[in-house]
Image (cartoon, rainbow, N blue to C red):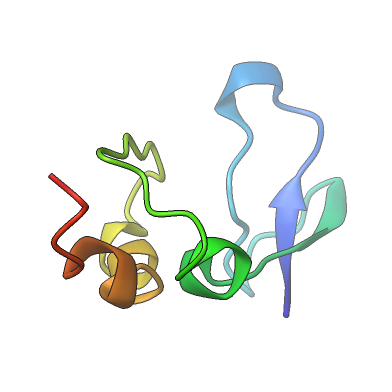
Length: 70
């Protein structure tokens, strides 16, 4: 899956809603569980996703419910 991400706002770059028209780059996104689980289970995770917390946590469901995740 890809998402549109702003590319001209330095530290303020963000996922672009459909209605926002600005310089963009397409960013490939993958579920955390698809990348790491079950081979690697971190003991903790810090996420900074500005209003996408629910989507990120859904993509980490197997990881965060694993007993090895603290």
